[in-house]
Image 1 (cartoon, rainbow, N blue to C red):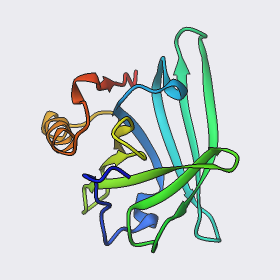
Image 2 (image 1 turned 90 degrees about the vertical axis):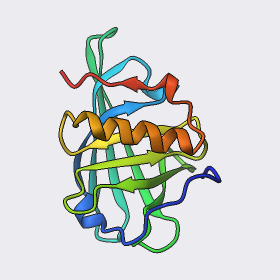
Image 3 (image 1 turned 180 degrees about the vertical axis):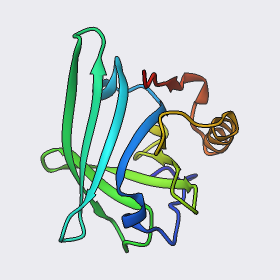
Image 4 (image 1 turned 60 degrees about the vertical axis):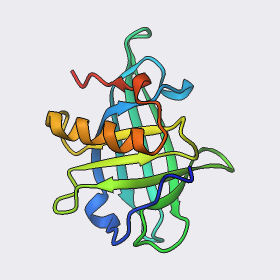
Length: 153
């Protein structure tokens, strides 16, 4: 993970599971051109997490879906997982901010400052959440000028 990013503690994967909407992201090839992006997290019996990412390609006029698996890197109370969609290759999934009461939004980093997401349990968030996301991300070295705000319509 980036040196400037620290995973949250006191994490509860059972509160985190469910459907999340992608509100904002930095661009990368595996999501390029996608709108209405969601991630569905399901906790498996062995403690790992099944991840199903879905998005709509306007260019191809079709839905695309990727299934992955995630495992905790350290203890399961730390928001630091490794996730794989491509066989034996894993990337970091680091939750560095989380709405604690109801797990309504999360700020997530990948292995370096090229990977960043704002996820929400609802298709939209209040402007102050976006402002907080931009501020906290900028403080951690992410180029927030390049954020893509994802259409959920």
